[in-house]
Amino acid sequence: MTETTETTDRPPPLLSTIDVGVATLTLNRPAARNALDRSLRSALWQAVADAGDDPEVEVVVLTGADPAFCAGVDLRELAGGGALESLAGADPPEGAAGGARDENGLFRYFPLIEKPIIGAINGPAITGGLEVALQCTFLVASERARFADTHARVGVMPGGGMTVYLAEAVGFRRAVEMSLTGNFVTADQAYALGLVNHVVPHDQLLATAQALARDIAGNDRRGVRRLLRHYRELANTATADDAHQLEGEMAESWLAAAGGAAPLSDAQRRTVQARGRAQSSGSSDRR
Image 1 (cartoon, rainbow, N blue to C red):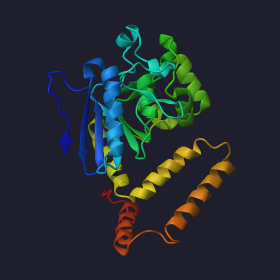
Image 2: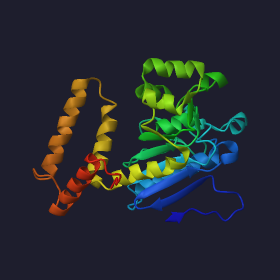
Image 3: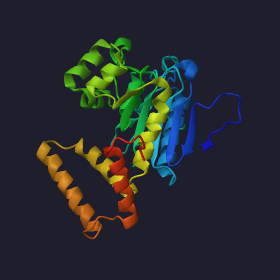
Image 4: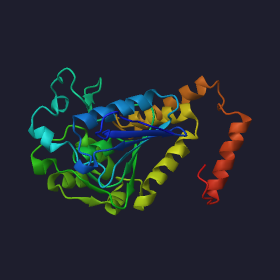
């Protein structure tokens, strides 16, 4: 296991560890409820990019230092001006830190990589912090998690995909209600709405997210990445028939690349079968 260090007395804005193919990134401005100032946004962007390039990393887990996951963009810094040049659409000045527009022009808090990112939501995820969570592949929530879009309360418009990803997760009308009222949603309510995949006791959050990450990391690497790319492509299809066609094309091209056979050795096949039998029988062994 490795951990980032800094030579200054100031704690690093983001912590990173790597263990058994899983990179765990922790937003580390707890006194500011992990608000996204330039230093944290820059560190988050770079850490995710590094994880994407690291051949030892298969899955990323993103969480926050208690008591919050992320309170959103640092309003004190925003009040000083110029904190969100790239979000506002202008080119950021040379040396600007954190957050950027992808080649397609969409603003993201971290780059889109070919590996899944599991959000382990340990506390409130508010406004920009909710956008960070929504940019993850899927979410596991602590019982202490809370979710809110307070853009309308502070008179700022979202630009990090809030209106798209929130509506995709909870449905159009629920998303509109959350955005217009700014009201908070509890972890259990978020689970009922489909915003999070699991709600677990707070002290089990990181272990649960990392166990899910290991489940993914133990699968066929190429298969995981191709499926993840396919699910992302589905979001841009217009109709169910378009989506079905896209899946068929994926299956045909994958099979052709494998020479018409599933690319598993006998040993790999036995491992997969044993894992399936263990999980179908209710065994607690996730691997």
